[in-house]
Image 1 (cartoon, rainbow, N blue to C red):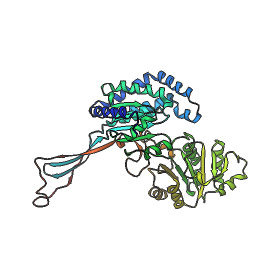
Image 2 (cartoon, helix red, strand yellow):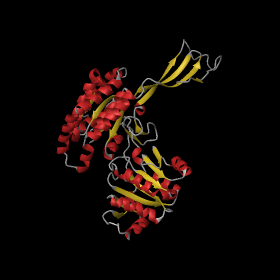
Image 3 (cartoon, rainbow, N blue to C red):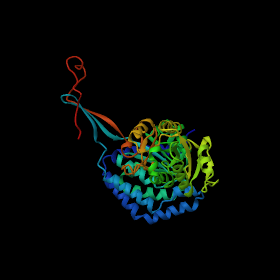
Image 4 (cartoon, rainbow, N blue to C red):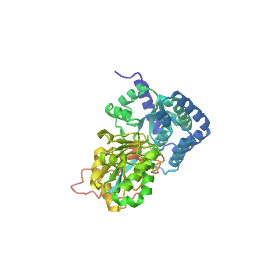
Amino acid sequence: MSSPLSEPVDKAAAEARACGRLLQKAPRSEILRRYASLLNEQAGNIFAANQLDLEREEDTNLKKRLKFDQSKLDSVLSGIETLAAMPEVLGTVELATKLDTGLVLERVRTPIGVLAIIFEARPDALPQIAALAIKSGNAALLKGGKEAGQTNALLFALLREALGAYAPAFHLFEGREAVEAMLKSKDIDLIIPRGSKELVTYIQKNTQIPVLGHADGICHIYIDDTYENASEEALALVLDAKLTYPAACNSLECLLLDKKLSAAFKLKLCQELVSNQVELRLTPSLYQLLESQSFFQPSLCKRALASDFGYEFGAAILAVEEVDGLDAAITHINTFGSGHTDALLSESPASFERFFQGVDSASVYHNCSTRFADGFRYGFGAEVGISTGRMPPRGPVGVEGLLTYKYRLRGAGHITAPYGKSKQFMHESISIN
């Protein structure tokens, strides 16, 4: 049975595709700057609309994601301005080959087409995603959560104002029925879900449209024995990865400690985590080590369950395990990780090379926090999401990840019949710099 919104969604997608073709030739950087200016001018009204959404919400954790304040606006504005300043990528040639005299093949970057972006709670996702779509020349159907209804409505109205004549390239929907209609639409080229594991998994299982995204963000940090003398740095890295935003998908969920690390190092690290109100899920040897310490708190120091490994807590909770060396750490990460982001803290470049080669994740780090896994921090301006699949795009997805390509072949009356007989292809690479 089709959704009551199937016809409006399909009509919007068709309208978006037609206008999206015009958007490809539009002054997109100017549109982005105009949108940033409108967002800045209307900051007070945006915050007031957001306050209405916050007042209706009772879930404390959801409120944290729902809040749109000056800090989040500044981040959005910075991302849009970065995108506006980026060189043009749409229509650029990424490969050129001379097949024969007068016969040149080019691979040209083009938009994917019509995107369906389904996001929950976080209203700052709307301007970030819309800006990336504009920069890459894509049209988009946006489906926000009802919990952010007032904020999303105003952010979208300002987007349409900035787009002017190109406004029909973007449409905003609400409600579960809109999601069902999008999943079945033949006029949508790519679905990008931004939200809970349940949302992403549901979408992946209920559509034949390609889906870009990830269901879990289970990130690890492994500390080897060479990092013993960098205890202060290790503390700072682990605290940053766990506590700067525990609900983020790039937050640390599992800490792996090498068995060769001293008891003093492990105790100092665990004490610091406990003092910062992080609940530790400890394997038996670590639980026994902590149990006799003065900082031990039963409410924050608990025995780990098997289910604690490979689980995304999304809160100030951390699974902690001891492993016997680098290979054991790699095996643990590939078994329990989600392919998102994993880091090694080590003084050995050779160990990191083995770690990098062995860990099957989209982002693999050496001596830095997992929280760097972010499109803005990567210099993409913003991200439309993070992909943990093996096929590209992978990791934080910015403008480049929203482009596909066409092959353009220019000839002068060339036909295929002579090749392989009287003629041979040149296949000469042409510099595109």
